[in-house]
Length: 377
Image (cartoon, rainbow, N blue to C red):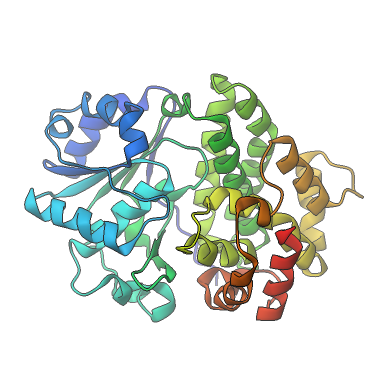
């Protein structure tokens, strides 16, 4: 039997952010905590949203979200949530603020440490419907966290773990492309390749969910069709809208699970020695993973080529590497500043990541080590 559920309330389009006061009222949220980061605040996006609702104008703002959300940041935001007697959260930003908000929403209503609820530690059934309501307002087009059931958070001991439950899906996702018009070219590319990777990995996942596969292919077509336009001209309204839809579609397909790219990028993103952007990591790792998965995925690779209008003999891994190069992104892990000596530990950690289970081809630590070497440069 295939259990197929979709999913949450999504408001999509230019100008949708203007209805945020109604959205808050509909959820019964009178005292929200705003989760953002310092860059989002400096860009004026938090002030823009606050001006649209009295409850937000007077709301406390936690802007200490790190590039990769941490347990320490969740706990700091939780203190603010409790100090102000908050009854819900509004997350403004990319995947990091949205994931952080999910962590706060969980601990605000559930006892115990964050680790208690980690997916790989048996935490999924411990997450209940009591999770505080979250409204997600993405300002990038990549993570899909606004409709995702997972939060990726690095614990105090350095493990980057997934917290997964349908109860963690934001109650409302407000996807207004207007908020992405000022996104820098490099971040447009990095988050856009995150969406590309989500669509590819969820499509290749062996779990049975034909609706999700159809969404993934459509999202991939949009992402590939518009990412170069969005990077070249950040004010291209059509490209921004299509990239936001592609990111949303990537998130809608998370129900199928991801794969080896994310099994590797999750522990890489948890490193304290160097800060590595998640979307850029995915772009660098994707070609090597595609080569590894080819023996188990040729039929689906053929469908991807067809969807993208590529010739049947196109090497998909090489084509993706070419796209990454045209976007001006790093082509290797070494170019991102990753030290080689961490590779063995990352390969071992990847085998324990929850995304490894839905890779189309089973991968050992040695397999992951080979993929890392191929991506290192």
